Image (tube, rainbow, N blue to C red; front, side):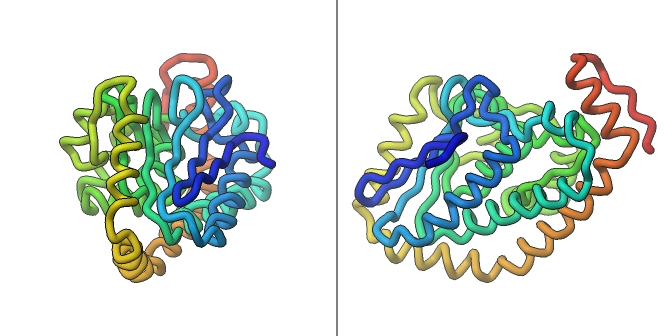
Length: 259
């Protein structure tokens, strides 16, 4: 059904697995579109009350596919991609179920934005978590601004985005960017325990609370997604972004000039 992701539904639980392990589950145009389609379709799965999102292979997701960005200089096409990202985020944020991100290895850029949109985030202690768009001269997308502000407040969110620092599970927990920091290799076990506890709770009341709070934030989320879309198209045309992605591919330190 999907090329780049897997969806499994078992009774009241669904699992979405990012499935490009040879590319560190980096999100190419296909994965972004498939995630948007999948999350929209899950709105119709009335029996499902918990959704787990995880990555196949060694990492959760390295973020947007930088090699794809290098190959694509069609900015109208990039606007379409931002539309798919907006669909993905809105569908995920408004899901009438409890969402859990199960993180091992890297969760960076757009991959980290997706994780931050979850109700619970479980990260292994050696995870590499980063809102690192700044390193290639871009701004966060996938509502990264919205989710960082939700968890950190405006001032700290700005500083974290500007720094683009790589965090491990313990550091992310201390900041409140994840909810559980667990031993390496145990994320799936801990997530299973959380799922069991949720399904043994009055979960309809929990989902109702989620929907009340999330619906109140929807206009802000939409405003930020629009700002990210316009801002990202602008940033894609800067000298600093071109230098950032060329340096990334060449594995050298970028020389930014503020243009």
